[in-house]
Image (cartoon, rainbow, N blue to C red; front, side, top):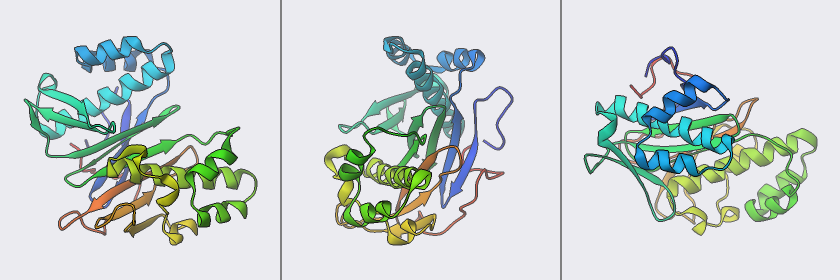
Length: 253
């Protein structure tokens, strides 16, 4: 994709290993929303009309349209040839003329921010969460975090506690989404590497909940939101690579 084109509502955000992450601006914008609606197919437009509130409707259209544009550019296909489906646990997949696309992707959005991750192969998951004070945070802590993670959170106070919780939550969500089993995986048993609890932004791991698979996990959070991407490591996915933000030449074209 190089740099974003004039009028686009997305931009390069991060390059982690072989995975590219794009940020999607989900703030209200009449021109962007009109352009996005034009990219949706008939079934997506029908789904768009079923949203009762403008916020979810806007986020759906802007993220799905950006995904369509970026996949079409990468695959060199016309939009009408691209179709989407969902696995039993909700993970999206895509086809061109009925054939699976040769690229992995995943999408997440929260508030005014969306992230789309792409990789040439391997399972992939991305998650983004705006950091907001949650009335049921203590209940979520018990549900989502493991024993060591809860202990780390208990030693943290104030805004730092909220930031740490969302950091852990997004990393777990990215791993669970990459695995593709949804909430069939207990998030409290998917433990984040201890080095990442101490502030390291990238690590690899093997989880007992996901036997036989190595994952690369990256913390992509910034001042605006918490975010993470998880990518399955294989013979040609690599365990090393850049961890910079907003690469000049991302892998998506």
